[in-house]
Structures are given as structure tokens and as C-alpha cells.
Amino acid sequence: MKYAAIDIGSNAIRLLIQESVIDSKSNVYFKKISLTRVPVRLGKDVFTNGKVSNENLINLIDSFSAFKLLMKVNGVTKFRACATSAMREATNSKEVCQKIFESTGIDLEVISGSEEAKLIFNNFNFIDLDLEKNYVLIDVGGGSTELTFIKKSKKIAAKSFKIGSVRQLENNDNAKVINEMKLWVKNTINTKENMIAIGTGGSINKLYNLSKHDLNAPMSLKEMVKTTNLISSYSYHDRIRILKLKPDRADVIVPSSELYQSVMKASGTKEIIVPKFGLADGIIYELFNENEKK
Image 1 (cartoon, one colour):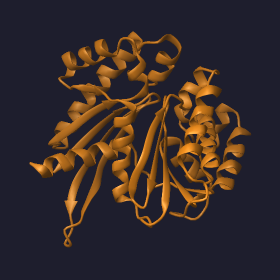
Image 2 (cartoon, one colour; image 1 turned 60 degrees about the horizontal axis):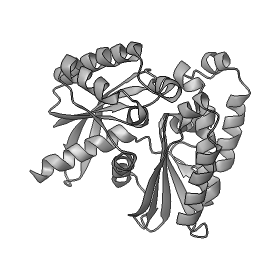
Image 3 (cartoon, one colour; image 1 turned 60 degrees about the vertical axis):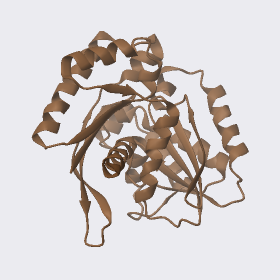
Image 4 (cartoon, helix red, strand yellow; image 1 turned 120 degrees about the vertical axis):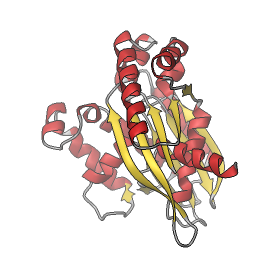
């Protein structure tokens, strides 16, 4: 069966289509059919003006129309569309959702930070990890950062913070939230328990690729700092021209890295695993589980 997830973030919007496959040992895995990413930066609107602009509303409707056709030709059976931080804060979010539904028939859900963290945690089931160890799952988006503390494969605590890479660019008054986040980490996580970080999000994947270390191996905090310093030494245009970053990744990758580093330092973690999963993957896993229960 084919499933799809539409992820409306603060920096971009995505359509992920996957097919559930059951192997000879009755294990379930998901085969990626396609991933479409559109650089619609809602966070630039919302974090400066408080609402989604008419221009981006049109971009959203056009993107949803294209997504609907892609789902149709790929034979998608079930899908879910979720919006996160920027839409949570937009004063016109209800109007935006209504106009998208009227134009495309797609019901866009604006999910809470806790729901977002829960969906991201779904991916923990598909990462090859030592389940006796302790992990802090870090997802840095454009407008929010979701943290989940996992002890011996069980979720102990989770919290969403209103701080992200696009918000860092659009608003300089973020020190208070960052300090609150670090304090929560220190109060929730015992730094003597040998924590390992798991990073999800577009920027951490790009940082991982640029660090040029062994494939599938964890990235150390030192490697992350070194790679971030390298990126910082390039101008915005040279990050695109020389490092081959996308225009909407080139300006957010450094502030995003700084947030990962803040959490890692506060939790005492020295390395981070980057499994290339995200919110969209978690949505599809949830759809699969709901279908299996019927």
C-alpha cells in the first residue's frame, strides 16, 4: 500500500510518498517512491508579520494542487497533511487552511508541538540502535525545535521550543528561549548517563554530508563545529556556488547547527547519529499503524 505525507514547515514544504513492504520474515519497511520539496518559506512571513502573505497562500495552493496530482498518478491510498510552527502562530492559519481545502479538497491539519514530537519519535522504530543506551532526539526546524529524551527505548520526556533556524534569521531576540531549552535539557537529562544524540531535519543531513566522514558513522560534536566553521567562512553566494547548498538552505544551516550544538553541549553528548528521517516519515508510519489496526 502506498502512503503520502505533506509536511508544511517554516522553511519549506514537502510531499513524501512511500510504499509499505513486508519481507520474508514479516518485517515491515518503507520504500521511498518520491520526495518533492518546494522552497515556500512561511516562517519569513509569520515570524516578521504574524501571518501568511497572499503570495505564499497562492504558492501553497499551487503546491497542494501539484501534490494532489502526484499522489493520484502514484496510486496513493492514504495521506495526511500537517503544518507546524509557522502555521501554529499565523493569525490567519484557519483562513489559509480553509482556502487550501476549497481549492484542492485537501484538509491541512495544524498540529501542536507535542504532536509533532510524537510523530518524529515514530522514526525511532526504524533506526538500528543499541536499545539499552540513552538518546536525545533533536529535530531543528525553521520555527521550532522538538526534543525527546529516550531511555532504554522508552520515551521519558518530550518538549517543543519556539526556536528554529528561520526564526533565528528573522528575530534576534531568541536568547531567552535558547536558555530555557538548555535549562530543560539539564533538568531532564542526567549528563552522567552517557547520552547519544539523534538528529533529524534538513540542515543536520546537509551538515552530515559536508563533514566528509565515514558513511553511516555518527558525527562527533567536534566534526559538527569544524564543518559549521567551514560553512561560516563562505559567503551566502559561495555556499550555493561552491558548497552546492540550495538557496533556502544556505542561510539557515549555520543557525540550525548552533541549535544542535546547544542541545548536545547541555546534554553532555559527544556525537550525533543522523538517520535521514523526519516528520513526514513519522506521519507515514502513523498512517500505516492506523491502517493495520482496522
